[in-house]
Length: 121
Image (tube, rainbow, N blue to C red; front, top):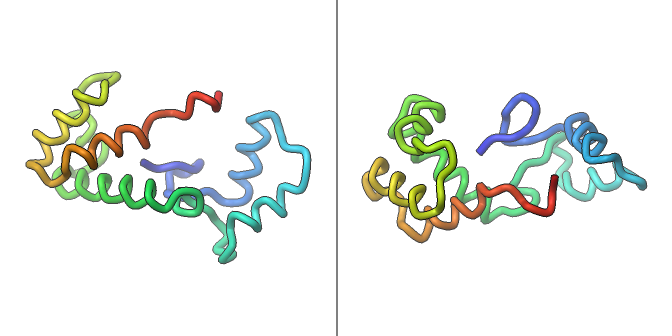
C-alpha cells in the first residue's frame, strides 16, 4: 500500500536508482528512463505513473481501512489477521470488517494487485 524508503506513496530518483542497483543495476541511461516515467517532472514517481487503475483501487482500499481503523497496522491486526491470506479469506475478512463498503469484485482485484510479481525476485 505504501512504497519508497520512507514509506511514502512515491519514490525519488535516488530511491529509484538505489532500487535499480539492488536489482543488479541497469545498463543504459537511467536518468533518461526516469524522465520518461516522471513526465510532469514532480521529482518523484508513484504507482499512478505505471498503473493508474491499480493506484486508484489500492488508494481507495487504504482510505477505507483508515476510516475504520486508527492505523494500517490496526487494520492488519483486526481485518487481515492471518500471516498469509488466500484470496477467499482476504475478501471474507474485508467484507466483514468494512461493513460492505467495498464490493467482493473490488476486494478480489485489490488482493490480486497486492500480490508480489513472481517475475521479480
